[in-house]
Image 1 (cartoon, one colour):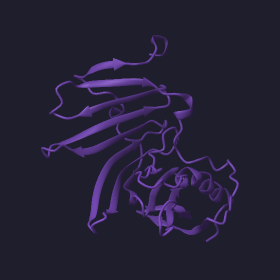
Image 2: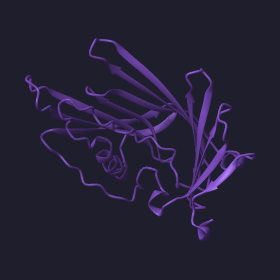
Image 3: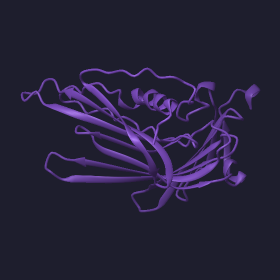
Image 4: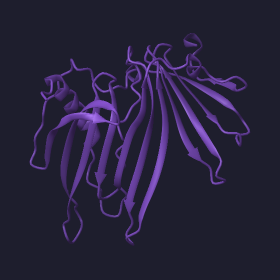
Length: 249
C-alpha cells in the first residue's frame, strides 16, 4: 500500500517533539518524555469519543518489575472542543476524576475535580492562548525536513488498523552513550507513533527508554460522531473562579 508523501511529512514533524531528550547525568533521574497522544483540540469536522490507556513498566535495580496503568476518557465535538477525564484512585480506594475542557472557540480552558471527598467544589477557568488552540498532529500541508545522524535512524511502517482505526506509523531509534559510567554503557531509546490521518489523533505511542522504562498509550473504543453538548459545559453546584481578564469573559 502506497503512503502519501504528506503522511510522511506529518510523521517527521512530530518526531522531534517525541524523541528530544538529553543524556541523563550520572546520579540524576531521567526527565520523562511526555507521550504525544492527544484528543486533537482545535481540529473541527471529525467529532469522536474514545479511551486512552497508558501502561508504564519499569525494572527496578533489584530486578522487580513495576506496572502502573492510567486511564483517560476523551471527547471532541465538531467545533474542535475537547474534554478529557483523568481517572485516578485515592489511597482510600475511592475513584476521582479531573475534568479538563479545552475550548478553542470560546478561547478558554476549564478544569474541575469530580470527587465526593473534595470539600470545596470549584470550577476554574483560564484564558486559552492562541498558540494552544490546536494540539492535533500537524496539518498535512506542512512539510518536514528529514534529519539523519549517526546516532539516529528511522523507518516508515506499513499502514494498518490500530485498535480499529486506520493509521500510518513510524519508528525512531536513538543511540545514547551514557557518560560518567565505568562501563561507558550505550543504550537505545525507541519511539513508535501511529497517527489517524482523518481523525488527526495519535492512536498509539510507545516510548521505550532503559533509564525510565517502557510507556505505552493506546486509544481504544473510538466512536465517531458528535458527543452530548452537555459534556462541554461546567457542572452545576460548583463555585466558579474565573482567571480571565474581565474583557475576555
